[in-house]
Length: 159
Image (cartoon, rainbow, N blue to C red; front, side, top):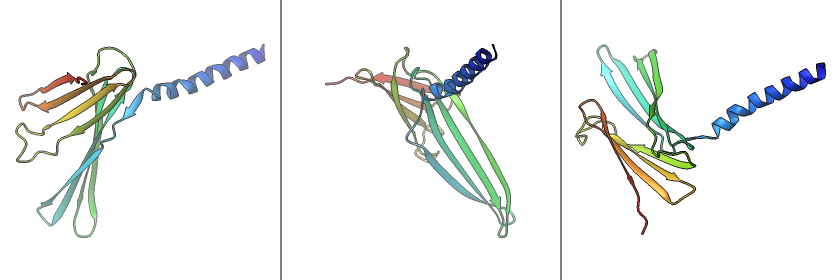
């Protein structure tokens, strides 16, 4: 009886160890990570540098994705680092395709706000492909400046 209980525990532990690995295979990190940094001077000869980076995590089965961002702000004077702050997280975005399948994905963003930005921080584009069929969908998402983002997707035609 002891051997049966040990065998059941071993089987349960091996299944628990395999479950996260199987789930991890369903996600893909985008290939277009970017980093942008800015520098500012503050009163009293303090320097502040702020860097932000983003990426996208894509579920290759459902076509749902997450936009992830990390930022670091460093404040220093001429002799020492005074303060370091970090922030970040991931935000869930809607599915690109309505049905489950086997998808590939990539995304990229506009540059940080500048004089060429009409609507604030700009936007990003997302490309997804059904790797089991000749199906590609391109999406552009921009900030309207009025609260919610505007998102439009288009299925590509092949000639």
